[in-house]
Length: 393
Image (cartoon, rainbow, N blue to C red; front, side, top):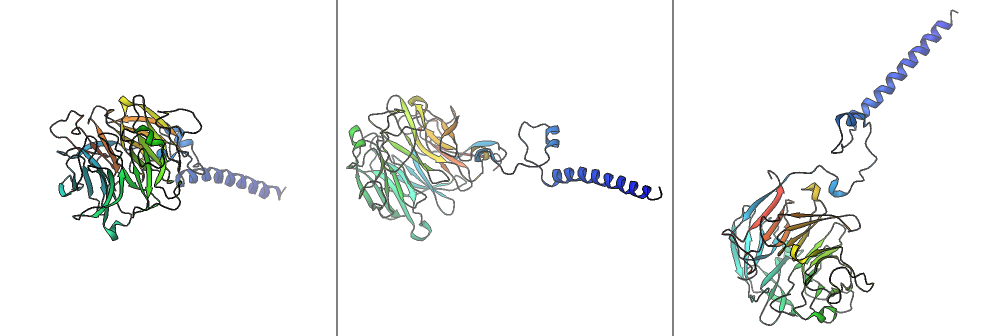
């Protein structure tokens, strides 16, 4: 009996210590590793979440708290602005289709004329797309797409100098001139063209019309293009005016339909997108179907962008498309396979015809109106550049 008391005391103390230790572990984990709350979680639910999940498995555009987005007018009094590219100092170069003017624009909205390019304003043609060399800080080269009296062409030049053509002979008309150019993640130049009213040319890989073209910065054909010694990257297009890449380097394009369906396409090298045999989704194995279609009255799509960098978390990775006749900015949420999971119309009824959307270095979106392109109903301040950004930034 003299030995039983110490043993019982030791057991009781051990059990008390173990119980305290178990309670303390849960509190420590909760305070040092708080889980990220779901938007609809109650305070009681939050208190019961002891440990975070092993990894965040939500889509990228849902991985951070949403922010309030506000729209402001950055610049006004422009005439049918068409293309925009950002300089290393975060100023932008801006083209006006009909005037042929190349303008500079800073983040405060100050606009200055840089030079006038020798373009020919003809219907939907004129001075259109613009892009900067991937090595701009060293070579200072600017690329532009414009209409002349004989063709559409791609040129390059240094600011203030005469343009040097690197690709000529793209068919022209008063409509369906394409015009968007952009350097891809591979450092190569992509060019969206239209069928220029000759529908059959879109299926002819020896024609530059109705295509997405792929060139080296010198205007040569890359050796890994899908068709040997041919700048054609994809074909069967009607009128491509939007080019955008996601984080994985996948190219997407917006395209005008005829009477029924506008399209967003995921571009594959050598892919045939069906025009003029298919408008919208055809389901035929020899043609690639769009990932999303729109009635022509709700879109008539031009420029496109995919948002990256996290400045607007709820829109991260979304494909944005400017609508002319549709007079709205479309947002398409994409999953990891590039499929559309959600569609949202922005700026509807607020700004009129929209020509292009570009992500600025600060993560905001700049949107170009086109109410002075001959088909809009301009207000006195048109045309404008709108900025969509987190409130207060």
